[in-house]
Length: 81
Length: 81
Length: 143
Length: 143
Image 1 (cartoon, each protein chain N blue to C red):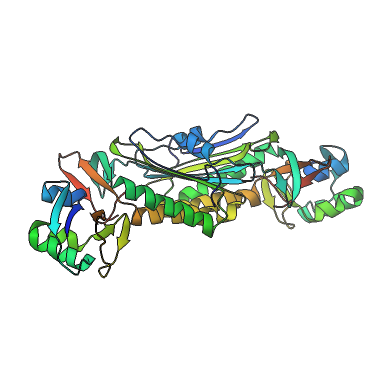
Image 2: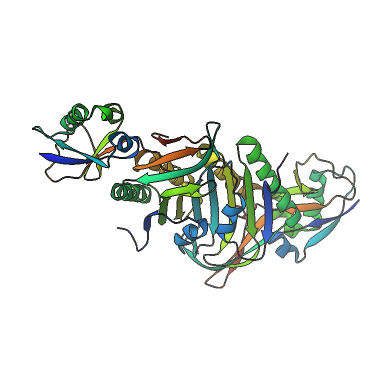
């Protein structure tokens, strides 16, 4: 499953782009997504570890299975307000 | 000592005036003031018991001695805000 | 002890609007501004209210208001505070009291604001007369 | 479940002013309105700040803001709530966030307001970039 993963804040700067494409093999969990991003894009690994993953605008735990066509984003610790 | 005592809210309505004059004998304490008002103006007695006394814009306890020329007021429980 | 305009106290017969309150406590070192507005409700304990009247022992009310402002500036890191109470006759929805304060950080803001309004309702000699829809009116004593 | 305009959520590139916020939660059954404004400070941990930039994951930010609004209306007797966050470049003193809510009585107001801003700072995907006077700029992650 090909997924376009949205990036924000420092991760966007590190990647030099607004998103990265990853090819996610089964099981398509948040945990697998984290591993794939970290191995494909090592520069994102440290920031990724501190970030939450959102799937279709909901924070999801590592064991959550990402449905096909979902909008996926890496959410670094937020600093609005 | 003659004192003009300021009244507010329901006490003003009960007295039918903005203030009452009392002649305070020694000791000129807040306690003596309370007794004198209550005996001279029985209609004020119930409200007076629930009220605080302010002398020169400060709440004062019963043992406080009222100085000559002070501005004295009966302060029913407040309801601003 | 207090910078220019650090404490602003007012009793007013003209309507209170909220914008000037927050603007009046703006401070380049403040990261948080909180405000409280009390507004006239259309009922009191289930009884329909038409309007309210507020009367004050003015000089003492201002002095008690100033004490509250000074206390919150001493107890918390409040930069500026404005405290305004309306007097006279008020219609439903009008603002009876406005308090705004600014601080460097938000963490103390809520305690300072709560203290200000809670203490105001205990110590400031202002009284409310409620005019009920049924024609009766009463002075409220105690809140 | 929610009355007209009971919940108003906004991300905006134009300056936030406080008056419309309080006015937007006015309600004839509300006796108390509280508001929180976050403003840009001129320093961060002692380092001079020139300006700030806010970026958001917009769709999710609005959905998280709505969750906060719904939660405070469920948990406390909040009548109406407006929650606005500024995006883009902000100068010192400008308002980054504004939250206002109205309730029948003041007693719950401070907890509801504190919950709203505290939760906002944990869950809403918005990030701040600080531009320091010395020329450096950094994305702040975590508050």
